Length: 276
Image 1: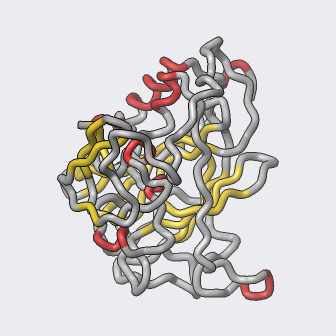
Image 2 (image 1 turned 90 degrees about the vertical axis):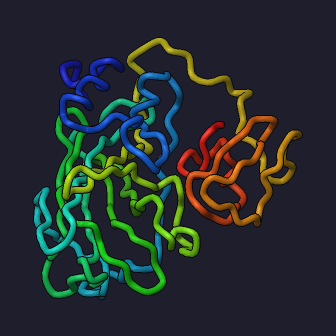
């Protein structure tokens, strides 16, 4: 990326607002967006992969889910509630990745995939600021899965990330074995349209543009084998929205009903818990 396309931390945040991407505090029900680390100086976490066995082998490209050679477009039209998904693609230094490929596909309002044509399938590229915007509909449900959107993301010359984006406060989030709260979008209602945001972080080496020191190497996430003292949160417990727990002496309020699992400790999943 050349010098002209590099963005300072403040410039990137201003660009997010100017582009109409709602700030994280205005969007409810999802984890903190990666762009917030631009302001805090934290090292961003990589966007996790998510495979559910829906990718056919090379000889079965007409299979029921992913299909290559989707048309390049930013709008996927059809009946249903209008949904606008926007965000950024970042590298390891939280700098934007220009011309990153995003290939989206999803079910229609009835939970069906178009296996013949390319309805609700399309790819696009991020702009010079690493931004993308997809206009589509809220996908329907089908047996065994919660509501989701599939996407493949690839920085120029880098490996492909295959993952899924999820909606907050969906009842099936708690029963879908593939669901990962780290892939929750932040979503809000705007008239008859739903607006969602998500920032991807790819394993793309970058040189930081500021002298902000990274977090101390001695800082670690809470372990799941031995919870710290002052903890009432426990693995396997069914928590309802509004439930209160403590973790490492700090209070948290449950934002979305779920069954606690290792790796979903309150400090690690702001999509499920907020500090009291």
